[in-house]
Amino acid sequence: MGRELQKKKSRSSVPKVKQKPKSKRVNPLGNAIIAANWNQKETLTQNYRRLGLTSRLNAATGGVEKLHNGDESSTSTTRKLAITNAIPKGITPVEARVERDPESGKILRVIHPTSKSNPLNDPLDSDTEDEELAELSQRKPKNAIVALLEEQARNGKEKKDRSQSEREREWIGRLVERYGDDYDKMMRDRKLNPMQQTAADIKRRVTKWRTNGGEVPVAD
Image (cartoon, rainbow, N blue to C red):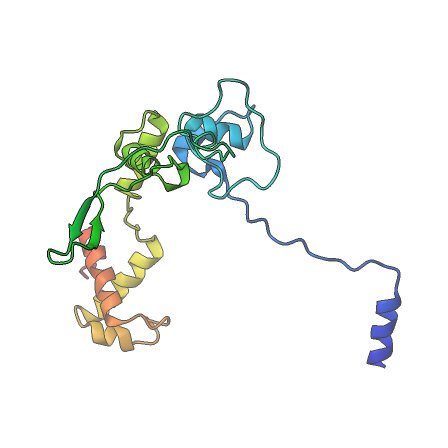
């Protein structure tokens, strides 16, 4: 019987209800600094570019906004890495030290200078890009928003002490009133400690309770 019902369901013209997967989009306004400088009239990419940030670490997979003349970034490597078929007219000479065998005069090895040689001026085989990136990393950011975000990242989130609720304070007061400072007995009491908190955890809570002015009422 069960199989027949399943067959009828599979043949039914009623579409199956499919749940949409949860969105993995990140809320860009989750940071207070970015939210204060956000422009609702601009797109996410435009806002991030204006703030000196990037919306994605990987290369763009779809269409990108066309920039007008003069809008190219100063750090762009598009022109530097452009490969052409033009043959270089001249090769830059480089110096090297040669070690020879004193008896035969044969060349044993060629010692090049410490800097990487690039006689063909190949942009893909150049150290200038690494030097520029190192210089940019050492240079202080010109954008005030980036400086604030970096300062916030260095300081980290401010830790806030959890305040004890009124019910927790009453519960700790009953434990201290019955057992004093015997935390092992507090731990083994299943009525007053139904959640089976450990002795170390109860001690930490009692210390915090006393620091905040917790006292056991004295009977008249």
